[in-house]
Length: 384
Image (cartoon, rainbow, N blue to C red; front, side, top):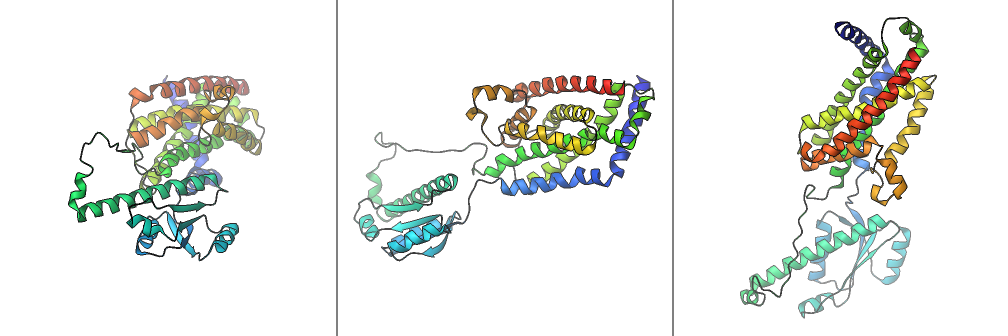
């Protein structure tokens, strides 16, 4: 046992020195994870702000201007144009610079003051279905808040009106909506933890895939074969440095995610890093396997991309797994990223513990042990 630890220590020191001396590997260790997190963190954001909107106000009353101001002050919409007639409306929508038009009819304020229902028209460009859905949702929220504010104002001016709708009346249904975990429905809070898992997977897989290939290219693999180092010692010496690098990268990008993007961290950091070790186990093993079947570093890099895209597509990161065909859903059970996405998002947003996440943890452990076993057999044949 003492001899095993000594050999692993020597290999570990050699591998760390080799990684730190290589400018390309130093670059891959630190710059890409931060750059990718910043890029994806800003790009993967489904919340729309300052949506360009045109105002078509045929009523031109204080009431219509108040409601138009409510749209502008919400932060969701920005009035970029004013329309005077219907012909201008068609032209401005055709040019595509305006995503929506807020249209007040000529008798808008008259109907409101007369106690009737006044129609407010939102014309939405439907070329982008996601944007159109969000415009409709935001508009409904703004109008509902405006109605509540106006009703409260009327009641304050005329207290007897409060008796018309008595508190606790059985004839009234009140809808109360409450959002848990991501109260403001900020999509970045959902995507950034997933991006952390994605970035670490790509980085560790690429670094590990080039580990043995690099030994072949520089001619040290033959020297390694004639030493008394056993396959298990060789594998430990090759993988432990990348485990340490993966932990360092997760600590780095998690710090950026929490303090730069403001993603809440409600769970246990210790549990996150324990699950991270199991998550890294699978991709360290896959990287070693790729390294043994590749002849040079370029081939290893290309092979990793062959694995990366299916892993991402079958993880639920982009497309919901429930929407996939049943046959494809069975393949997702072999994907470590699928389970770690659940773990990291639940720890970040829900503060979930092991009592809830144990099925995902066991799945990661099983997949990691199975893939590592195959990788050890392959590496053993290479050394023999």
